[in-house]
Image 1 (cartoon, one colour):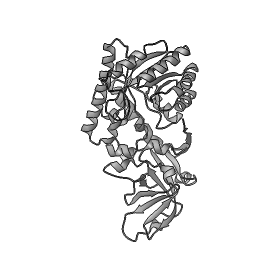
Image 2 (cartoon, helix red, strand yellow):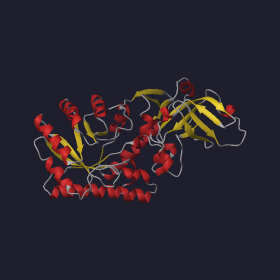
Image 3 (tube, helix red, strand yellow):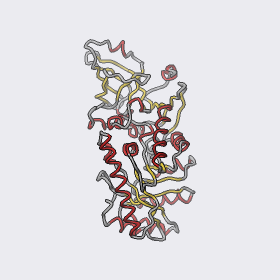
Image 4 (cartoon, one colour):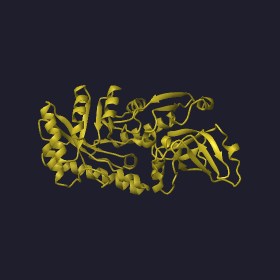
Length: 379
């Protein structure tokens, strides 16, 4: 690493370890290839064309997005097979149609009869058949229709229309984020698979085509033992990993590719504090590890080489100030250990939330050189 190059940068900034990211990309793609499924990564984590291009180069087919702005930006970057994996509402129908008419192969998501009917009516009125998946709830985590619910067939019936086309089913086992043993994660991966496949079976038995069976979260993707009946898997945070994923047990801290580079701006020796310029505006307010066995506060503090500093915790943050607490020997010379202007790296609780606070990545290559990759935000 060229420490002089880092020292010249204004902080706080988002630092991306390219070699770690590439290993994470290869690990996931190799697993999906071995399980015999198409991999459609979720681009909401990176919101960066350079990252997604590397995922596609490794073998990914299409991407998943969480906003139509993401769809727009990635389509402009040359990626045209896009799944918008948030239930669509009427105010966004026209935006989706504009993307399709520009050449984007956009798939939409619904979870209710009302949405299916309104989307089909919009398609009819505009001479277009929207390609649609039905969201299935396989774990009670968030939204979707349970596999055995009568509404599943009612939504499908509403999509048999000149204005819509039922393409399949989708689920996301978000409750996997609260698990922390291989056995529990394997069981959730199987629950996710079985529930989504069951929904597809019910639709086919009722006479509907259901070519797509889409599942996925980073924990379940990395713990699934079989994926019979599944056609594609989605996962996002795996590309960087974070402390929540490390707490679940799907990665080690040494696999986390994303950190915030911060600078020491002051000390409170009597309180055992080291003050940095990376407060909650740089890290986000996400405290996801607070519910895990190891609470990392606002992030895990490491030296500029990325080696964790066990004696420093990050328990307090103001908007632009990070307050690090020294837990080492009494009377430690904080100003000598962490002098004014020295740099620290802070691993994030949630890569998506921390990434959203920054306009770009400073990308650290294996040879120590730096590049800047822009990312976008908003809706």
